[in-house]
Every structure is written in C-alpha cells, then in structure tokens.
Length: 320
Length: 320
Image (cartoon, rainbow over all chains, first blue to last red; front, top):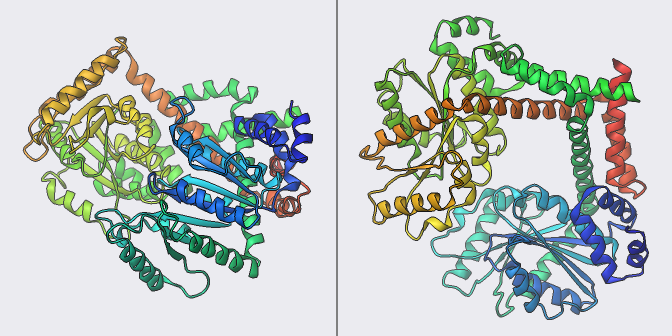
C-alpha cells in the first residue's frame, strides 16, 4: 500500500518519492490513486523538455543545466528516457550516474524509465513521473527524451520549454532538418559545435529561423554548445530563461498547462472507454458471433463495429 | 453519389474502381457505404505485402512481380505507400509510372496513397483500398509499404505473405537487423545482391534464420535479387508461392483473414466509441466545466476522465 509513502512523501522523503514513482511507473489502479492524491500539489514546477537524436549529447547538457539550476538555489528533478530495456542492463544509466557529480545530493532527483517497446506509453508515463517530482516540490523538472519519429511531438504537451539538441554532423545541412523539429523547438542547442562547420551550422540555423519567422511571437533561439567543456551552457540556460519570461509575460504558461491537462483528460477518457469496450462480459459474448458473420460476408466490419458499440452501451445501461 | 459507380464497378469498369478508391481514401460515411457494399465480394484476392526501407528497391521488385503474375494470366492490383505528400509533388510516383510498362493495361491497377503525416492511418487505408481491388476481382493485390518504425508490423494484418526487402549496404551486418523485421518476414529479398558482400549477406541471413528456427512451421526464405537486371525475381515469386501453399495446406490463409477482420472490427469499434465521446453534445457541454475543475486542482485528470465517460453513457441512455 502507498498510504505510508504518501505521508513521508509530503515531508520530503526521497525514498518515499522513489517508491511512489515506481508505483506510478507500474501503472494500474494503485498508480491512479497515487496520482489522484498528488494532483492538487502539481502545477508549480517549470517543465523543461530536452529532445534530440541518440548521441547528440543530451545527457551531458542536462548535467550542465542541473549544475546551473543548483547554483541558483533551485531544486531539480529529471525524468530521462532510457533506451536500454530494463532487461538488457542499464549501461546508459550507469554512465549517467557516474557523470553526475551532484547525483544523490538532496537537491537533485533523477529517474530513468525504459522506453523500448512502448512508443506512445513513454510520454504519458514521463508526464506522470514529472507530476510526482512536481508535487515533491522540485522547482525545475527536466524531461529528457530521444527524438525519433513522431515521439518528439508529444513532449510539447508536457513541457513549458522544449530544447532540441542537434549536432553538426558530416553531410548534414540545415535544410535537411525535419520540419517537426522546427515546430517543437523553443530553443535549439547546436552541440559539439567545436567540430568543423559547427559555428556555421548554428549561423545557418539562425538565418533559416529568421526567414521563416512569422514575426508574431517567439522565434526559436539558437545556442552553440560544447557539452564536454561546458562552453555555451550558461547561454543555453539564459535562452531557456528568456523563453520562460516570454511565456509568463503573456499568460502562456497557464495556457500550456491547461492544454496539457485537456490532452491528458481526453486520452484518459478514451482509455477508459476502450477498456470498457473490451473488458465487458456482455460484449465479449457477442463479439465472436459477430466476427463469424463478418467472416461469412454477411456483415461488413463497419456494421459489426456499430453493433458491438451499441451492445456495450446497452449492456452498460442494463446494469446501471 | 457512388451508386452509379458501384454498378459500373461490378461490371469491371476501371474508371469506376478509381473513383470508388478516391471515395474510400477520403474516408467518412460515404467511404463506409462503399466498403459495406463491396465487402461481400472480398476475401478472394491473395494479398502480398512488400516492405523495406526507402531506397531498398521495393518498387522495382514490385514491377518485376507484376510481370511474373501477368505472365501467369493473373490480374494484379497494387496499393503503394507514396512517401511524397500530395502537395510536394509526386516525383516517386512519376518515376514509377514511367518504369511500369504494363501500367494502363487492363490487368494491372496501381494506386499510390500519401503516407506523410498519418502513421496509423496508412495501414488501415491501404487495407481498405486492397478490399476495393479485391472486390474488383484482382487475383493478386500487392501492398507496398515503407518499413520504418512500428509501421511495418501492421502490414501483417492485411497481407497473407510479407516480403521484407533488404540491401547489403556498407557496414550493415545481419546481426544488426531489427528483430521486428525477423518477426514479420515470410520471405526476405536481399536486393542489390550484386554489390560486394551481397551473396554473403544472404548466406548469413539464412544461417541466422536456421539458428533461430523453432522447427515447428515456416522459416523465412531468403532470395538474392538484383532489381535492375531482374535476377532472382522468378525465385522470389517462387518463394512467395511456396509460402502461399504452406498457408493453404494448413488452413492458415483463412485464419489470417479471420485475424485481420477481427483486428479491423476492433479498431473500427474503438474509433466509433471515440467519435461518440468527443462529438457528443452532452459531453461537450460538460467537458469545459470539468477541465476548469482540473485546472483548479479540485479534480484529478483521472477523476475528470471517469466523469466524462459516465456522462457520455448517461447521455446516450437518455436519448435511446
């Protein structure tokens, strides 16, 4: 049971926070209870998303940002997507733990979660774990995700500011940037910018952003960084701060939260309805019969689907 | 209206088939009507999926397979995923049309659909267009899809046999093959096998399949092909035929169709329920109020979701 953990959690007990995060990560009804209990205390933390391809140096930049925020006296939580599965060992996590000198210090709390095999699941779980860290009183919560395919879009719903980390690799040019990247970035970090062509890449990116500017709000800032030396990291933290000030001056921070909550409620409602559909005894008993009709060509898939929905609703009505 | 097209469609009119496919591609209620009307005539065509990364040479192999099947006197339909958006022009499709000498001949019908921007949508639309071609009487329907991310898994539900097209590119070795590829392939085409290391790649793949064999059914066949010259294409068609015979001898062809229909009905039922949730006036009027409660921290997202579902069901009950 989680009740004793909740009490300890609210007194700032790190172990209790860790236990509650494990419960949330497992999911199910107990996770729901925990999140219900924590929800009224969320909404205070600033959520910063860091996304980019594997190998771009996200973790190193995250470590630098942690130091920046700690220097300012802020507490930090991190939810990091770990591309290694829980079964194949945690090499990436291991590296990371060694790299972070502040790990274990009371002001920093880092949680890695496995992403393999659940493309849609990650962003929701990450958002829920961020909620736990938020309710735990972290001033800043960093969400580190690996941007592949459509996943990177979703970070938007959980983060106030999104940093996209790029590297000026051989053969890349700014034109080949996926348009999705342009749409989600509030700040670009051009990392490993000490490589040949690095500064030019950042310049090209700035020019492209200028060309595309609609002039009616925020144009993504571009910061050249070198993760290994820490060059440009203060500028990166500064760019994030500018975006935060931009959001807060216009009431957009609250709007972002409202949007994220709406998306969350909608997705939870759909999930509940879907569960109802397939875990309903009344409908189960009818589905096989309908599928036989479909296989025989007597009903179309659309007709069968309509009948299933109708019978689930009827079954629900009879019971209530 | 589609009624006149339906009559012509059933007499084998290609233009009517093309119009009905456009209606199906657009979706909505009219598409549903068309698919309902055609459904009793589906289930006869053999569905062959061809998947692989962009540039692997899928289209060239598809063109060769079309010629093979035409030589055998079979009619062919093709549904091809076109990675160019309808707005950015159809360079890929243009190339393909020039390449296919049999295009426009009555025995071949090719339909390209845009895939950009709808990761889940493609496989469903492709399956529905395959239904149209099936009802139109095509003996073989080829489904050509670009295998990236999770998409390739879904082809299974629509295809009887799935060919995964690989190329022995620099630096690749068989060990690095995504395990998903192994799971969906009934046949591997190692294309561009005249490249250095091509034959060895095919051999390595065969060895790996042998090692992993569970010995209880079908082990994927490996065929070395050279799209440009047509080498190995007859062997590829032969491998597909062997898999088809394997399925038919064990009643697995019908089982695959039953599975695909079940998946289709389930996904349609979920879609209908989801529509009901968000297009329901009764729930719309409550959602904004609930979201305000959530934003104020008085209700958690889980509680709000549960209330929305409850009110949709109640609203539906009151009306019926």
